[in-house]
Image 1 (spheres, chains in turn green, cyan):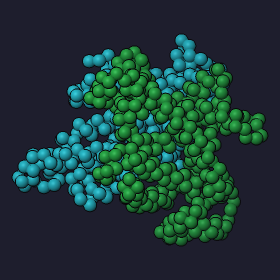
Image 2 (cartoon, rainbow over the protein chains, first blue to last red; image 1 turned 90 degrees about the vertical axis):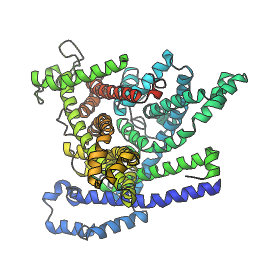
Image 3 (cartoon, each protein chain N blue to C red; image 1 turned 60 degrees about the horizontal axis):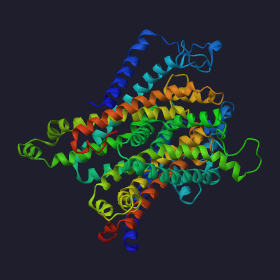
Image 4 (tube, rainbow over the protein chains, first blue to last red; image 1 turned 90 degrees about the horizontal axis):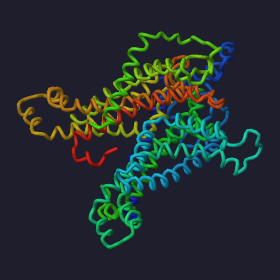
Length: 327
Length: 272
């Protein structure tokens, strides 16, 4: 198994490395084609009163007067050495900004993933078990509507209901505005709404997938056999049917990382959650290339790693892949 | 025909009529600000209420849907065209060209679409063109994959062999024998792409990275509405969102129905 895993991982990496390089090249080309002048932007209003010599000196300092290929290689070299540059909008090193925020994103996204998995497994299995009942119709109908609803809009409705009308939970932020220290209880209260909305928005595909897959599996002979042996319905569904119905879902989950990133960007922005995803919007609004490029690269790495993990999980979960090798 | 299909078709027709007819009947002065009637809850005079500067939300929603629909259509057209050309080239040429194009597709797919869109819009100042370009550049991969896989199955069919034996060149095979078979798939991909493109436009506008803020677009309206939400004005953001949800849902119901009809085996499985 370890050999199969190692071979698969190696094969994936062989493809991933040029891919990440291609993404950096694409980003750099886009930045060069953009009409924004980073120096002018850095100077802001001062651009009008700054003498051309000073502007030229800044350009020289930033290496903007060098050939484009050299600029790219310098930037890439810096990235490889771990120097992500300075964020022009936050006036701090990019690595520092990301380091400070990534924990909050991982916390929110991690909680949302767990919640999404548990809830959609349970609800999807329920819908499949009670197939074609009013409950199933309600569940699948909600899931289809949720698939079509923009997550930022759902988030606003949730804020209106739970923060404005009922006043149960805060409408956004990480802590209470008056709080001077970080307290777990306070953060937890601010975490509930974003996590629930993110989990809800990501759940419908999984829920519908579990439902459809389980309905197909429930018709198979081994389920009939399990029922014929007099096993309880819970055992039949939980231990026999669900287990076999879930296999393809592992790869699907890894392939969903891009959607998860998209959801995180929108949810973090609506709830002013201080994570890396909302930072990408702030960087974009300020046309802050170093920060935006680093965050885009980070998301790309997350997608690549997600695919890798999905394949790895598949190798572990499916004995056929393990024995016969990866095709 | 199922009731859901009828409702979906009805919704789409009603929205299309509203988008086409209302601007011809009721003129919207986009800058018309009436602060005396600001933030009014839905009433008989203003069924969807008024926004924070007193503009009628219903009228603006119709105009916003028009803008979003137009951008969605153009963006879908761009991405499906690019995707079709790429998919056809990859499928028809095969070999190295196929591998290169599909690796490019993988590359584009490995950057989350919204982030890529944000990246493009941020660097090329927010405008309708930037939004269309960002949606077109990020979503052609889906169409390319569909077209390529269809071309690969078509290539193995006897009539393609017959055409080649009959002396047809590559271009003629593509134009006369492949494209007509691909059209239904391309059409379906375009139909599915429109709601997605609308979603993309509204998301970018909502983040403040899409269309210019004075323009009545659904995303801009939700963004505006969000500001007065904490004061309890739910209508200014609820209704624009509803008008993203409704067409998207209607299209997905119709496409689902069409797929069920095309594939009778699935008919029993996917009853909603």
